[in-house]
Length: 444
Ligand SMILES: *[C@@H]1O[C@H](CO)[C@@H](O)[C@H](O)[C@H]1NC(C)=O
Ligand SMILES: *[C@@H]1O[C@H](CO)[C@@H](O)[C@H](O)[C@H]1NC(C)=O
Ligand SMILES: *[C@@H]1O[C@H](CO)[C@@H](O)[C@H](O)[C@H]1NC(C)=O
Image 1: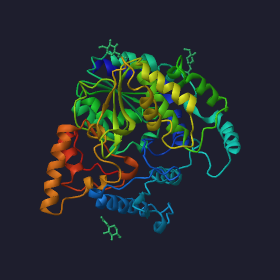
Image 2: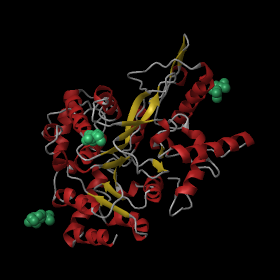
Image 3: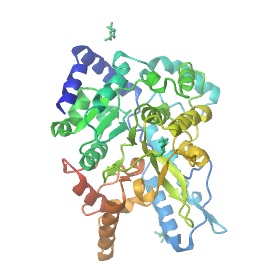
Image 4: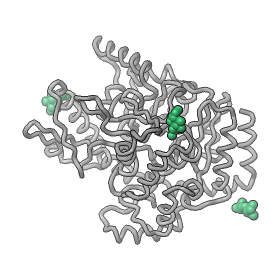
């Protein structure tokens, strides 16, 4: 720990301070003001997947649809024609779970972000717009601080880390809220001898130090490090992609570029350093030792329980694992910034479907319970105070089940960030038993 702190101080010489202040100021302007934590729906409105309802779960499906409507109804900016957003015909239900649109609306409502292209423009107009923005996109540039990325991570990892974890934070430090802190806190509680690198420009600052101080003071090994995209993708199949993006030769697509860069960086950092990548909307419940070259299913086929969609919010990989190379290649060659999830969870799903069984890849696909024990439609119940004896019993059973089976609970932040955590709810119970600081409130 001392090593790590001493290191933190060397890197933050007065020169770096000046640079950091500039970076903070810029990042407030340049970065989305909300977390880029992803929500990857398996169903989208542009390419609706038609689900055949399970007779036994008809109520769940209806309740889920109701909940989706509730969530949408509380987002004033989003205009949903509620009467037509659920289509029920011939026993086929098309669920209006267009979480990506919801997320987009939320982002649009925040401070303007040069990484989010204007809506309703043609591809040519967007590329034109993007080329004008390029000189301002600090995230694509290398600085003295960013160029130290690799060395800083290597040096930090020598810190007797049981496991090397990575998270990414591209939003301004001021938006790193209690829920995001919760992910860091529960991770360190469950994996106290591990190290966490938060890949972030905004947190690699005095403000970031302040945010993490309470955990650093307790001896937890956490370091925020400014990323260097160019060196991260160097000698990988994504190197050309980055060059083309920097030259304005690729359409960044309708979705924020920060989301795509986050998809890319997690692959590149695992390829170059190995370890565990986690999104910042998890409650971590267990020690990760024993997990190797593993990802989790976020959706399974009801009948066979076999995995259907995988998610890239949690990934465990050895350094240089060949499938990471495959991921990077798929990312670079099939990139489409306008289809939600295409370069993230769906990319992962495509590649694993294709090469996951390659002998020697030793890949483990974990079940829903590992990281995504509840989906974003049903998760609201986890925040509610039990009102009846039956509900109390359900809370008990759920807390017990999660504690036994789950490495973490993905919170689908874009949906749940605004949910209040009721006392006695599943989430409240989990937080109380997995927190370190145990603040009064983890409501953002
Ligand atoms: C869903 O909403 C409809 C209309 O508001 C209601 O009649 C129905 O009981 C609700 N279903 C569930 C399972 O909550
Ligand atoms: C970056 O590093 C170079 C070489 O060490 C040095 O000359 C330059 O002043 C540094 N720039 C900043 C902004 O610190
Ligand atoms: C898979 O496991 C085998 C046997 O332990 C090992 O030789 C091989 O290197 C592993 N492959 C990868 C990609 O880690």
